[in-house]
Amino acid sequence: MHRVARIPPKFYPHRRWRRQKSWLLENIWTPWATHHFQKTLGILKPEVVWVIPHGWSIPPVAAALPQSGIGFHVSIHDYPDVRGHVMRFGADRSYRLGTMVDQLYSSAATRDAISQPMADDLRARTGRDGTITRAGLEEEDFHYLSGKTDSHADSIRIAYAGTILAEKEFAIFAQVLARIRQQLPAPLWLDFFGDHSYRSGDWFDPAWMRECGHLPAPQLSEALKKCTWGFSPMELTDENPRYNRFSFPTKFISYLAAGLPVIALGHPECSVVKMAQTYRVGPCIASSDPECLGQVLLKALSEPNLWSKYGQEILRCSQTEFDASRMRRVLYGCFGQCAGQSRRGADSP
Image 1 (cartoon, rainbow, N blue to C red):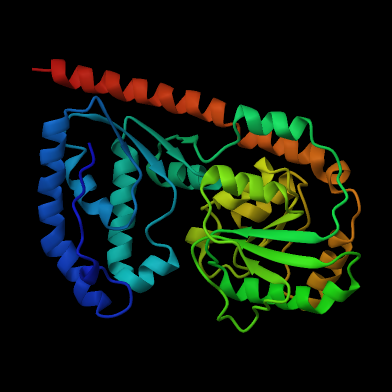
Image 2 (cartoon, rainbow, N blue to C red):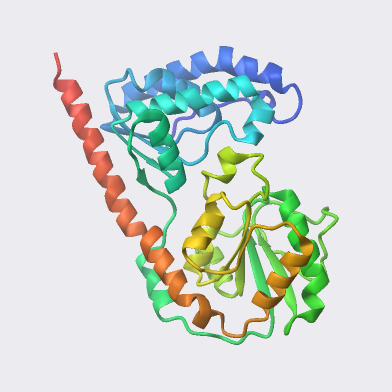
C-alpha cells in the first residue's frame, strides 16, 4: 500500500517565498501530516517502521513515531542542515530539523548511517551506536570484478553519474580536461548519466561531452562498464561540512561495481577523499590549482593498464566497504530487533 501526505508543489520552498512557504509547512502542513501518519500506522499496523529522515518528512515522523509503541529503525543518508536546506528553509528551521533527527536516532530501536564519519558524529552527539548501510555490490558484481582483465579501448571515457552538486569543482575539472585532452594518447569523452542537462554551462563542449540521459539501474551498470573512469567530486572548501564530511555519493559505489577506477576530487576531510585515500582506487586530488590538477590527470589518463594498477584495490574496497549481502543481513537483523520491541510494547499493560 502506498500512502503519501502530499505537499502541493507550489507550496514547496524551492526559490521564491521560501520563508513564508516554510512557515506554512511547519505550522499548517506538519500537524495534518502528523495525523495522516498516525492514521496510516493505525491502518497498516506494522511490526517495524523503517525511517529515512529527509526534508519535510522529518517533523511529522518525529512527532508521531517515538510515541507509537512501534519499534523503528532509522537510516541517516544526509543531514537536514546541509547548505542547500539552510538556503531553502532557513538556518533556525534547519537546526530544528537536525535536532529532530538526533532525537529519532536516539529513540530508535536500531539505527544506521551512510558513512563511518557520520556514524561517529552521531555517536558523539547522541551516545548511540549505529551500523553502516548504503548501496553495495551484489554477488554478480563481485563475479564480474573477479574475472575482469585489462582492455585496450580506442578512447578514454570518463563517466559522471547523477546530479552535479559541486558545481565550481566540476567546472574546474572540465576546464582542465579541455586544456590537456589533446595531449592524451586517445580521444577523450566525458559522459553524463542522469536526468539533468548541463549543455547551458559555459564549460560544456559537445565536441567531447555527451549526455546519455537517465538509465534504469541494469542499463546504467552496463553503460558504465563501457567507460574507462568514474569521476566523484565533492567541494574543495569546507564551507558545507555537514554534506562534504558525512554524506557519501552512491556514484562512487556504482563506479566500483562497473570495475572503474575513480577520480576523487574534494577537500581533504570529505568522505570521498578519505575513502579514496584508504583504498587506492584511483587518483585522489585535494587541490583546486589547475596546474596541479592538470599534471595529475594527464598522468592518470595516460596509464595503459588500469585494471592491473587499480583492480586489486577496487576489489578490496568493494568487499570491505560495500558488500550488499552483508549489509542486508545486518539490516534484516535490525528489523528483527525492532519487531521484538514492538511485541514487547504490545504485551505491556
